[in-house]
Image (cartoon, rainbow, N blue to C red):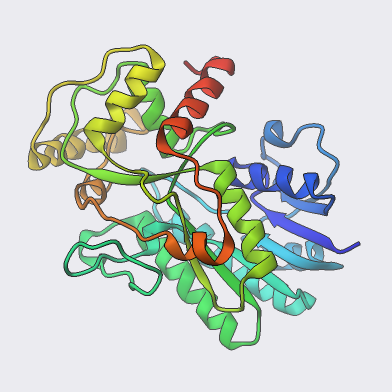
Length: 331
């Protein structure tokens, strides 16, 4: 049986992917670090090897005998005291994974990117896979790192490695342990920590749909293909999203709408406090607000048409997310 390596398997998307692969009867090996939380994969029949994506030699050994690699590992953070770590993991880590895959003779890699690496169209219409990143002027550390990782992917495709890229929208659903910024947003509303909303919007996708999209890309996509993974119709304005979370969660929703410039000023203030005083993640950062205020629309039709990616509607995604958080005593 072919052996599959998954990086980032202890994380949110990675764990969902591993569970679907196991249900298909695949033989799975995953990379773990010494400080990895194994809760999401506890009890699963898989092989674990110690490897950090910042260490190319460890990755090469981890890939020995593997024919396929899902590179899901990455750092998804909206605030950090040292943003250089984003580049080390998301850019340099991707380079290490692809170099190791090429050296190990891996047949195919699926690389997990993000719609964060996608640009905007000039007329504001939904951006398909062909729209290059054009938001450098906004100084967005996470988005920039995901875009640069895609440049690395293109480089290794030219070197002869078969790589397919998938770009999930904002992922929600069961299993977001840490939580990621998307899960934190849900919990902040449930815990009534959100004082207001602003004129912004985002596309949201279910974690199991994203996992299915990875597998479908591995099975059916060609080298160099790129797919935006999301649900057509799941774009939501921030006020509407907060009200949906509050209604399903049984709490009151924020009702004050703040102008975007004031929201950015507030985000600057709380980020400054986090940077120099509390050293704890702030509720929002200027980069968060600037991105959401774009109300960037994304075209997911290619993944639906070519791969048949499942389409879970927004209400169900949010309900599944809240149900899991309540079950796990987060809320």
